[in-house]
Image (cartoon, rainbow, N blue to C red; front, side, top):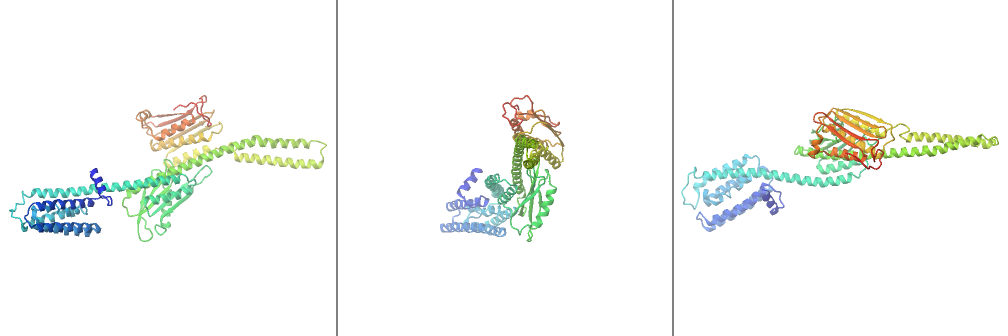
Length: 568
C-alpha cells in the first residue's frame, strides 16, 4: 500500500492524495482496457460504431471528471454520479448488455459515489445500476447469444460488483486517513521549524514582558488562531515580593473583545492549580459569531505562571488544538522558569558581591576613618593648640564621625550578613510554601546554619536539587507530606528530602536503565557540589533523598572550591 501511495504521488504531485485522484487513473485505465477488448471481441457491431462508442465514452470521461472536480457542492456531485450511472447503463444496449466489456468501466460512477457522504448513496447507486443493467439487457443490439438466467449464472457478477463497491469504500477510508495523517505530519514539521526559530529568539529575551509578547506572536502564527491571549502573573527574583500581571493579545480588536475574555481569564486564573488541564468555552465574538476559546495553563511541575488561550471558529480538530496548546504552554513555562532561575542566580551573585564589598569597606575604609577620628581627638588634647585650629579640628572630627556612622549604615543595608538577611533561604521557603499551596501538600522546612555564606554556584545547585526532588515527590510519588532538612553547620552540607509517596525500587530502576532525567540532574548537581547523593526508597514506603558532605571529605566544594573527589 505504501508503494502504491508513493507511486501515485510521483505521477501526480500537484494534487492532494485522495481516492478521487486514484479513481481518475482507474477511469482512464479501465476505459483503455475495455475499449481494446470491445474492438477485439463481441458483439459483432460495425467498426465505426465501436469507434464512435469508444470516443463518446472518452469524451464522457473527460467531461464528467472535470465537472466532478470543478463542482465542490455535494448535491451537484451526487446529481452528476446519478446521470453518469444511468447513461452508462444505457450504453450497455449498444455494446452487448451484461456481456459488454464496458460493464467494468460502468462501475466508475459507483466508485466515485464511494467518496460522497452518506455512505448509503454509493450502495443506492450500485443497486440502481444493477436494476437498469438487468432491465435493459433484453434490449441489447448485435448479440445473438441466448439470455442466461439471473441466478445462478449471473450471481458471480453481482457478487464481484458488491465486493468492488465495498472495497472502494474501505479504500476511500484508508486513503482519507493516510492523507489526514500526512497533512498533520506536514503541519507538525512546519511547527517544528517555527518552534526552533521562536525558541532561538525567545531564549535571547531577558524581560518577562518581552518573552510574553514574543510568545503570543509566535503562538498565533503556529496555531493559526483568530486570537491568542497569553496571561501571566509572575514574581521574578528575590526583590519582587508581589506578582506582576502581564498579558499580551494578538488578533483583531473587533473579534472577541477584551470585555468578553478579560473577566473569564482573570477568574479562571484564580482557580488554577497543577491538576487543572483545559478549559473550553464558546463565547460570542461580539460581531454575531461564536467560536471556541480554548485555555490551558502555563505551568511547570511546581509553579503556575499563567494561561494560554486561543480563539477559533468551530470545534473541528479541537483535541488536536488542545495538544498543540499544551505543548506551547509547556514550552513557555520552561522558558519562564529558565529566566526565573537566571534572575535568581544573578541576584545571588549580586548579593554575594555586596557582602564582599561591605566586608572590604568594614575592614579597610571604616578602620581608616576610625583612625582619623582617633588622631583628631589626640590633636585636640594638645594644650599649645590655638582656639581657631582647635575649632576646625572639632568640625573635621564631627564630619569624620558622621561619615563613619553613614558608612556603618550603608554596610548594614548592603550586607546580608550584617543585617541577618538570608535571601537564599528566604527563596527556598517561598518556593516550598507556594509548592504546598498549589498542590495541596504539607511541606515542612528545617534549616540549621552557622557557617559562612555559600558561594552562588553552591546555592544554585542546592536550590535546583530541592526543586527537582520535591517536584518528583508530587509528580511521581503522589505524596501528601514532604519534609525538607537543610543543615549547613560545622562546615558541611547535609540535605534530606523525604516524602510519604508510593516510592519505587532504585536498584531495579538503575538496573533497567529507567532512571529519569530528574534523578540524573540531581546527581549532576551533587557532583558539582562535591557531595554524595543517595536515594532510599521502596514501593509503598515513600522516598528519602540524602545529600551529604562530611567535614573531612577531600576536595569538597562547599564554597565553590575545586572538586577533587566525589561519590554518587
